[in-house]
Length: 313
Image (cartoon, rainbow, N blue to C red):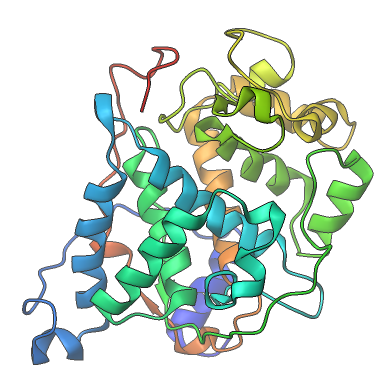
């Protein structure tokens, strides 16, 4: 990586520089659509971030179901990356074949919203998927403010089937699938912590809407301990078999326990590093990207209701 931005990204990927930032010194030069705004790459993203933040903000000050769909769309797309195919290129939204697959059920609302946002703000889908996931995460109380880079090239060819992990996969298969995407077992544990805000609708349809954490809508670490059978574990919480096997596997068990006990900052930084790595998979113009982290909403580092269980979003 030869440009200043390329070198910055390289340092983040090597974990020599933080994948989070509180940089927020930015004033848009003009309103959306004005010539001055069009000349400033981050300007359109500033206006997009404001709209997304409002759309992702739910009752009780937590992030809502649309925010959860944004995070899931990002993870579904990047989890379907293979050694020689796929990546952060927008194809999960751009190709009807992908979004119609059974494993992508439940993403229809956010996909429709992404099409609307892409047209409204004049941005590419590959960038939009990464960006709105970052906005969704920081909208959730306690969520990290992850660094975002824009300028990806879109591709509209569906990824092959069979690359996405299944909730009933073994630890061996899950770890192998993610190693193929350059994600270590340590980073995999961090990524799965996003289940703190998730709800399942299709794994067990009789329990549609069941959360994987008692504090859905808060970006907390409580999802790790319930997976181990530790409290708080309300009866409404649904544990994925894939999470359970990884929580117990020798390659991931220590990090799973550590993520649940070492606090928010430990997990946030691990997640941000993993997010950055996944969000750049398949991107072959890294030296030409531009950082627009400064337009993101500021994080909610403290949240009075963080421990309140089963709040309806």
